[in-house]
Amino acid sequence: MPSITSLSRYAVIRIFVYVLALPSVMAVPVGIWGGTPYTEECMDTDDGSCTVLADLTADFGFTVVMTRMQAGYLANKFLPHIEEKGWKAVIGFTNQWTPDDDADGCDEDGGDEEFTGDSVTGVGRFTLDAFIADLRDRLYDDEDETYAGYVETINEYVASGTLIAVMMADDVMNYGNFGWDRCDPKPLGLNLMGAELKSMFPDLPVWIRLDPTDLKERYDDTTYFVPSHPSCMRDPSCRRPSNIDAAVAQYLYNVDDPQTAREYALEQKAAADALGIDIVCGLNIANGGDGTSGQIGHYGVNDAGSTVYAMSPDEISSYGKTLIRNTGCDTMLLWEFDGEEEWYDGTIGGEFFQSDADYMDATQDLVDCDHGLFGCLARFWPF
Image (cartoon, rainbow, N blue to C red; front, side):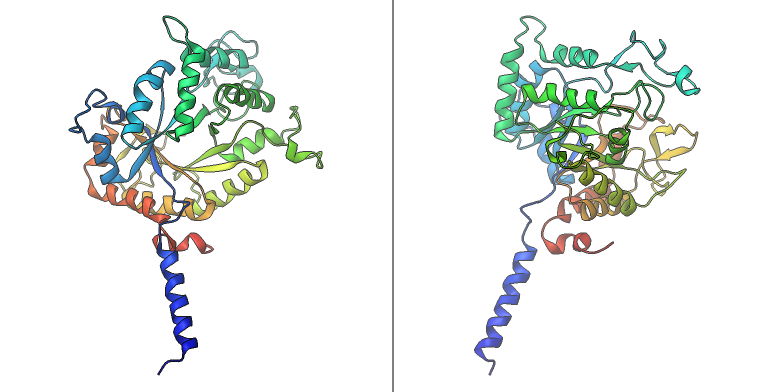
């Protein structure tokens, strides 16, 4: 007959295993960039007959969307709709870039050929004034400019948890030629971009879509002044951003210079930690595959002229779980899932992913990845 002690140990082990198998309180929601027309369909249908978003959640596990729009539409239509459907939103209030084409230092076509010696590839020079003007243009109402009113309403959705972040900028290294140059925001400019958003939405996290390693490179450049961060008071060499809460690290398999997802995740996590910011996981599912999907990617070819591919289901599952395991990120965003935009060969991305049940299983794998220890075992393992 088992002793009381052995029975107690057995009970403790069972309880321990049960607790580990429970859904984690740190579960990582999976979301999409774009989302049109899915996230905006049936806004005027309130009889429960429209199940577009519910179907995306049931099929793929999606519960978050990253998109851009005017403040009036956001406050009066989009956020109420998203909240009613149980989704969350990340919003960009500016264009992908907000250049000042007339600013000194970059030519009229947007590049900085004189400075870099390279061909013109950019879109104009960043200025804080141009960023603020574009931001406020989207926040003003076209008719009565009820700027403050929209900010107040939007903050109500911040408080309710429906609006989880604002995307301050995307691809901020692309104002001039690709890569950091004098056309791009300097560290002080990045800090002030975030400060402008924080002044309106003090409780809303500010995200930037940029690899943390690239952001760290900008702040580490001693050519530029970096205001002292409170966490750096005892370390004069410490250079950290202010008013930026997280960076979106978006992995893709680079066909010309491949790096494993684990190597990428560890590098980005280390850089984010050094900057004192959080990391948001991302996958470039439209252009970031290794070719095993057989589907030409959104852009068709990259800047080097190599063919790019959409990720396969196995890649989405493997890469995504690797990022979650090795970064501890609190959100996963997939670029992009859109039902209107045509890819290089005429494919509609959203339709392509919806046509294959394996893609649904793959994204559900990411949802399940953080559902307790047994949902994503290697999250606690060294690989």
